[in-house]
Length: 438
Image (cartoon, rainbow, N blue to C red; front, side, top):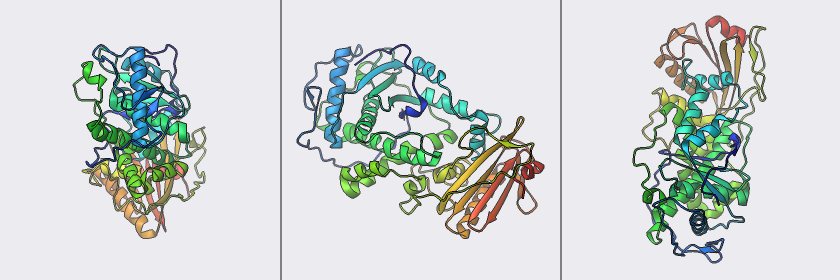
């Protein structure tokens, strides 16, 4: 165990499981089964019901931290009915150290490519850099992370006395348990598949933390080091809603999703889902949602002035949750219940593919979406046209729209062809034909 940051430790972006301040879903109350199963509840010689001689008011010494972590792990075993296989190392760093670690990382995705994804969703316009804003959101709101495959957790402390936030510790120790028992997988083939997988793992970590802290702590003496050390009492930083709708989706939907799995078949049902994780956010949103997305190939019909970005894969799938985020952020869908991510214009999604293009300093994209039938394709196209008009879009001909100024100024073509919707975006109408000609 280490109570201080180790110099030179780098965090790999794809190995992060981050818990955010203010993003977790509050679950309904209920009576938990607070009975410790035989064979569970002891880690590193510390049992779940051992009394700890710890003074957290001046931070935790290395020995105190080790005791505290081991008892927390023992209690997670009791709550989750799953045993740890190895010890877990915990270190505490301050937020500035965390930001420095993130700054040392490089993203494999071109910023221009990334910005087109957020622009296509009408979430972050051309006057803002989406990659920078997402990075800033992580830097300001992350409370801790687990390094997958390493049995190492990092807790970010905002108090003058370096300390451990109990909620964060339980959340991240649950990730360590997931990794030891099932192996945490990253680098899913699409954003949508990664978001669906994250909903399972983040939802379980939040649910375990909820059961631990709100139910089991009614019968346990639960030390809260962050309170004893006089932690920050100010509200956590709020994420911009248009950013939060995407990156906080697994935390918003996940606890309810995993709770429903548990209610249907106990923790065994959650265990089985780890063996066969969800592949689309459509099946998270609606149990009838497609789990095997339609494979979409977009042929390159661009002129020599326009080209795809030099990266693999050339395109991505954004998924049903991202479509809802677009509609909610632009006032087309009601966002009063942030856990739902459900709207008639999103239901029936079976797949999508978006390919960004660039020509010098100008950008565009081709985005094709597949639906269960032509009626649902029309319904989505109508909703997307509302997004256009709410951003100043003016119809030009049968399929084209022009937004003359503002964050999303440019030209857009919306074509419905049977159960498919194709959207082409570019700087002007002439560019639409150059990006994706007939």
